[in-house]
Image (tube, rainbow, N blue to C red; front, side):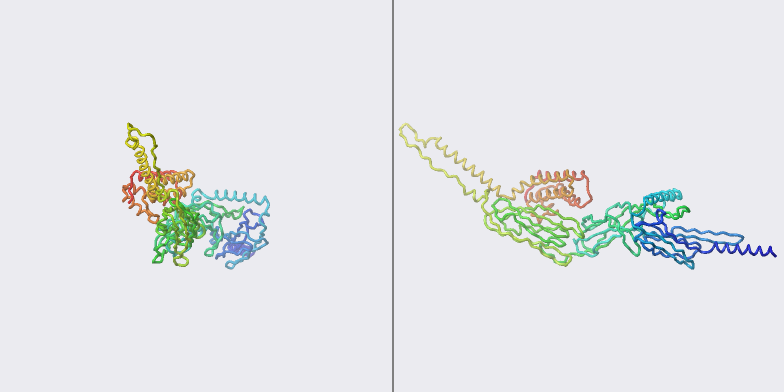
Amino acid sequence: MTRIRLYISLLLLSVVALAASAAGKFQVSVATQTGGDDIEVGEQFYVYMKLDNIDGEPSAPDVPGAVVKYFTLSSQSSSMSSVNGKVTRSSSRTYVATCTASNEGNYSIGPFTVGDTRSNKASYSIVKSGSGSLSKMQQRQQNQQQAAQQGARSQSPDDQNEGPKFIGKGNEKLFLKASVSKTSAYEQEALVYTVKLYSSYAPIKFIGATEAPKFDGFVVEESDETSKSLHYETYNGQEYATAIIARYIIFPQMTGKLTVKGNTYTVSTDEQEYYDDPYFRMLTVRRPIQLNVTPNDLVIDVKALPTPQPADFSGGVGQFSISSSLPSASLKTNQPASIVYEVKGSGNIKYVKLPDLNTLYPKQLEVFTPTTQVDAVSKGATVSGSVKFDYSFTPLEMGQYQIPEVSLVYFDPSTGRYEKSVAKGYTVEVDKGALSEKSQTKNRLKFTDTLMPVGKLSKERTPLVYGFAYWLWFVIPSLALVIIVFVYRRHLKSAADIVGTRMRKAGKVAARRLKKAAACMKSGDRERFYDEMLVALWGYVGAKLNIPTSELNRQNVAQRLSDAGASQDIVDRFVAVLDDCEFAKYAPGSGEDELKNVYQRGADVINALEDADLRNS
């Protein structure tokens, strides 16, 4: 009987032990990166929730005094055993909440309930940043090194090569989001295209573009207003580290639906991995990864400018104003003067054009092609600054003349109307100049009669008037006078022929501009180099063929060169150099060899036109 009771007791103890082994257990703990007790403000720490033999999943906890950045399942395991036919199953899961301490104080977290199991309560303290000891910092570094070694030992070489290598449009941990200031805009209206990075990985190490965005149908101005550091932002209920990595000001050049295709960026960061070590408890190891991410494409609906357009529309889209300045209102004939028109504002300011002043000014004032100075930068949501048009003009006749007001007609997208800004006019007095033909032709040389001396006459003496030498004193000065007057009148006529003078001196003016371009090339000023090359090319052909500023375009210049006798090869070379200069101004930076190539081609085609003996059509 005693033996039976002993067997029953042992059986009951076994059942109790098995039941205890299968009972659920829910444990909450708080750990710092160094393993110390105190957490500094701004420091990252972890809340571990370990569930043994419990069904159900815990929710992301609210951690007092801290911000929860991530909540993930870090590890899980399960096992099954059979003792004397009795099958026992067990499971274990560990969840980790990665937190950043924000407020000082003593806090506690828990208890939590999952299923029917209640967790313990864990306490922790957050102290002021910088109050930690040197030993704490050293301990942190030591633990990080040991964690990295432990993680490396726990991975095989094949495991270390695993992880994301390519992400197309992105995933929930890292992605790029492209946006534009307006999805519906007018032609030539300034728009802001922005690429923003969202990441829930560890701090970003490197961001680099592997190709450029595709802005088909747009003129592009790159802006340097990007993020210098990461900022935190909540998007779709999750917190991300964000940064603006690219920003462009784009101007649509055609109507319809235009697509902006995002480019690919390479992002280097660290991926966090967690290890449950029996000595160091839960360890966090960062493993470097490289991701290729592409932002979303955008479609922009571009509307045409309202019609009918004003006849004197400048092509400007934005907000502009124009002013004028005349250094002197007292002028002289055949002596050059200047007037400056300045356009200020924001929008496509680099492409604003003024009307042909020769059609506005009195015919007695001949106006030449202006020198343009652009001072505009990409700032905010547009391109703003100023453009100066420095015009030279020559009075041809004396008198009082009225320089008219000059209007700048532009389209304002904010009002949807064509607006006008007016530069004031001037009244000028033109006096006689030193090279005036009318004044010079009145200056005639005057001669007095020469009296013959009175002396004694002799019958043997021949009168002086019958001598050949006597008449030479009249013939030679008269011939000399005629030659001098003829030569001088030709000189005055040549000086008064402003068009002919410009045509003859076009090559010399272009040579001076090419010298300036060469100086810019040596100093590495790439943008100014292309500006000087364009001024040299346009200025040369405009002066050589007497083409007004308003008619200077590729089609017209090509036709006028052909009509003037230039070969098709020279015309094609001239237009090709113009296109390369225009394109290179807004393309990515080119090397010194490319600048030398453009310079040599421009000089060669100008020399070829000089040798072609063009005729003015």
